[in-house]
Image (cartoon, rainbow, N blue to C red; front, top):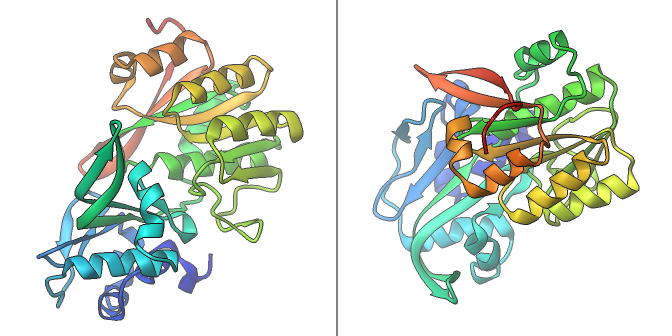
Amino acid sequence: MAEHHTPFALAAQCFPPTLRNLLHALPVTQQATAEELRLRAGSGLRVVDETGREQLVPDTQWVTQRELQDVIEIATHASFHNAMEPLCRGYLPLPGGNRLGVAGSALSQGGRIRQFRSLSSLAIRIAHDIPGVAEPVAKLLNEQGLTQASCLILAPPGMGKTTLLRDLIRIYSDQWHLRVGVADERGEIAALHKGVPQFYLGATVDVIEGCGKSEAGILLLRSMNPQVIAMDEVTSPEDVAALSVIAHCGTAVLAAAHAAGTSDLRRRPLYRRLLSLGVFERVLTIEQKDGKRSYRMEKTEGMTC
């Protein structure tokens, strides 16, 4: 991805000119390692680094609710109200694989958030493409003869699940010469633009985005004859059902889940169901200590459900 089209630069383009210029003035090393950009009414612009620490951007001024709305309107080239539906579902996908989430005064109906009356803060998660980050995992799989294994990646939010998944897809495609179908519901894995992935995923990869993961996964299975299907976070019973169909058709699966580890995974009914179906051969947990990330791989065989 060209320098002026890096995920950080694309995220900065979502801000009004004054804030955008402050972001462009940050040291290149800080831009490269930024995980999030956060803006709160009555406070200044902050950058979250790879350790999770928030740092106030130099010379930033307190911002208003109107400026928060401006960010959303710039990001979507539309009105604040037109962006409401995806924001109420969780976050708004942005170019380059970034995503924007908000907090504020919400209105709910029937147990679901329907709109935000006003905003108090927003966060832009910055996508990171790090070729080679999955090499230690690939080495373990290769040594165990599992180069077409189904793996579930576990970590809390913001720990690099999508980054690791993206690089594993590249390895399955370019190193192990497998056809990989990617169910990219919100455009975070491939970030398609005019049909071309903005993140290189491999020479033998086919992507469907813009629809639910379960629907995309089944469509890929039927239409593209993949040897592996990859998707991001498993979040619904429909996702679990689709993964079961895919796996029992003999297609390997790569997916992710929000969990701190296998014990956390087993406490959740949705994931207990997933484990009981025997979809995955290995569970890979991303761990962090002193700002450094490491990987722990476990067999799913024998995991109680």
